[in-house]
Image 1: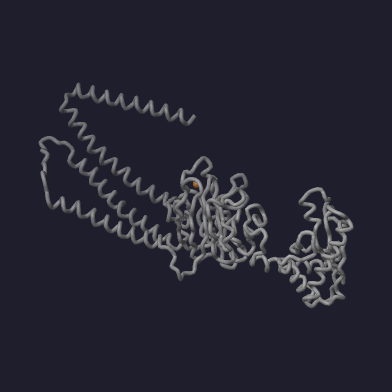
Image 2: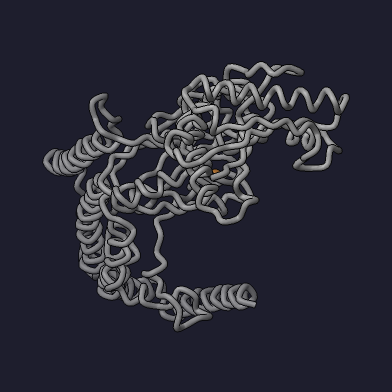
Length: 498
Ligand SMILES: [Cu+2]
């Protein structure tokens, strides 16, 4: 409908203009050529002046009226340390070009009026004037030099990489159609190595898990947090096509190029809460966030720093949004502690895990903490069913009661638990699946339970606190109908008795 109205308007305006042209031609014929052009010159002169008087102030008034829509003004002030330098560059350019714009337009329309055609006035031609040539070449050259030098200075400041001694946090952003994968380095503060050849559906970044720096790396899937006042270096890459890492409130914008890592360093200086508070004073941010719910939260209350992709990278380009929340260092630390390592939670033990049969240094303290909290919960629980815990990381050689070397970590945790809780006794239970001869299974499970007890007494636990029982296949955890279930049933556990 709107399109139709616009088309009709264009047709009508064209008809009007053609008609005016024809009327002018007719007048010229009636009045004579000379008279008509005298009139036209007079009108041209006055109309030019009128145009200037109306439109030049209108341009300036509208710029003032809409200043809150411009970057760097009103609610769009910068939230990063370097942002102010970029905004002031834009301002300086705006002021200089603004002055030139106003002066040239006054001159243009004023002279069009002043030198309109009049009887007995003759045009004067200046063939050449060295002084004028020098002035209008030198003035723009000086101004341009000033702008370029300041611009280069700002560029060098903004694009400077971090120094080797500096305190900063490095994160990584990988663009793909159509989302951003953001990786944090985890407690070691270092991002692990990547190799594109390792990329699979379950290892989207192609992380090389033989590199221990990868083990604790975190890939959050919800809001991302950054500490205020901390320098952040973002490593920017892309997997498929060109993307652009754009955090507009921080004046951060950098291409993400497949095969060519780029970076951007910035320091957020306003927390999300502080920025929201600044938005409060603008009436437009006091409108309801959801127009369908006028009593609901206001726009300023729901404000978030957004990461966008500023490159038209395909159909779903618009959906590449992520929320970055800037908080105090304490809040950030609390959030960071909650984040789980991608490797340990999503990839460990699966196909393609190069460390499948190894216990990793990073896992030992984690398993110890988990073990001690499980024991604590079991002791505190009133329900007898909770008193039995499976020793998940105790392994034997196939068909024998010889403990594998890596079982020592879990068994040492058990030693610690027994020493920390001198009031408890335990029954160690050996279990098998239902394959093979039940008699042999029973015997093997008995020997395995005894091997665990022997390990514990070797570590100084009184034999009187331990009882080793072989249950064979008599107490399965799950029906013996699949390899996974049978693996579950082959286990060693312990039951706490007081
Ligand atoms: Cu994109």
